[in-house]
Length: 296
Image 1 (cartoon, rainbow, N blue to C red):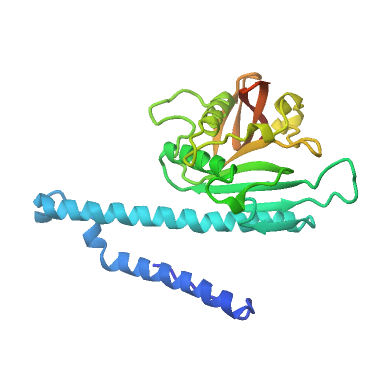
Image 2: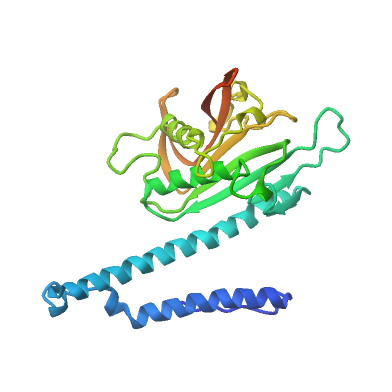
């Protein structure tokens, strides 16, 4: 049983208090329903008469599957908005202007002063959270977020010409094996992460998935990275240079091997730049580079 209370003395915005209370009430109602109907969701004993009844088994499985689906999607939605607010707060504290639903889920304007050498610089961020244990769901988030950065899904979220394009994915389920399939038990490497990200960002289908506006990006930025200590790499392009990066964050650290160094880390986040490496006429070659990874 959960109990949720909203302290109106701490929040002086009445409309916000009412919205928080409505979310809390909905959660409490759902948990109360689970307690009342818990026997409908599980078959307690193999020898019980209900276990022998196909209709009872079917209905119980349907109810349990639906409930898990509702909870997974609800957690992902709430966490997704929470994550946007969290990211926005980091930029607000650096005195940057933020926007929601314009140029991305979140867009950030950098104050570059009166520097005439650079155009206004910012970030266009598409943020997703995955609570599912299915590795394929992370792939779907990458495809969808990459497409959103083209502006095809919602024109208002089209990045400006001076925006760095960012896909930010949080994996919240410790059972999610991404980028590995559940059948692949081999050690996870940084190359595995790069390959999976590059594949699903670049597999473009109009209005459905992937990214295709490579001509808007500065080419060959991936070749400019320089390694520093503790796996932290210079990931920021120069002012006026525009790139596309995919950030993967794990709530539960993953053991990842850097094949070049032969070292295994407990990694909490990886940033991969998906970069134009060559362009000849209409033929564009794209590759991925790890530009930063954080570990314990």
